[in-house]
Image (cartoon, rainbow, N blue to C red; front, side, top):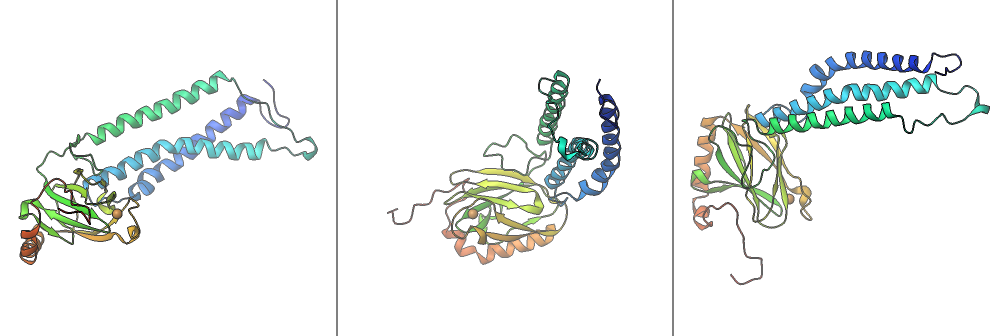
Length: 284
Ligand SMILES: [Cu+2]
């Protein structure tokens, strides 16, 4: 064991770094779990949004000791191993072929990745369903019956169709609070993406595809909707504000929409999982 002039033996450095890492981790962990974690995006307005906040917190907790080690190590070498004699600047000994370091690195990173894969799969397959689009046959389904709402994207707006309310198609999105919702996301032209940030929902909107995403809103509130897939000239203009409302407010609103759009609804094609409109300029 060699020793640096004016410092401890090599094992002494490792011990110091380990102790400092442990101290920084112990100080940071409560802050991560109780302060930073609960304030992570996208907030807790829905069941799937809350699950995303929890998952972000778990990943942050897992990252905390690793980040603490990296920062402590960086700080330690900057202070302790900095050469004081600028005439004697030289590179340190390489650590290639250090079996112990390699094994520790492989074990730690493999364990972290495997844990996240198993944890992620378990959360995804729990009873809440998933706010990400799962395609036409979702693997992760909620246990309760869902209210279907079709999201139809086109250049450059979203419209919303309610198959259980006479197939009315509305310009605004309203959903009732504390009800399981099944979004059926599709597109009439280019590829788009339905991103309802505060709901924790983001689902690709592709022509010819019925992309299903589940959500259960917990509070009455507004939420922002944006297209999250570059879809042409006015992509940046493709936004909307949705509303989570009480059951009775929803009943009133949807009845109004059915009255307002009665004539339009008659002209619409019957409700389908997706639509394939004729391209413009072609005979029908
Ligand atoms: Cu778009």
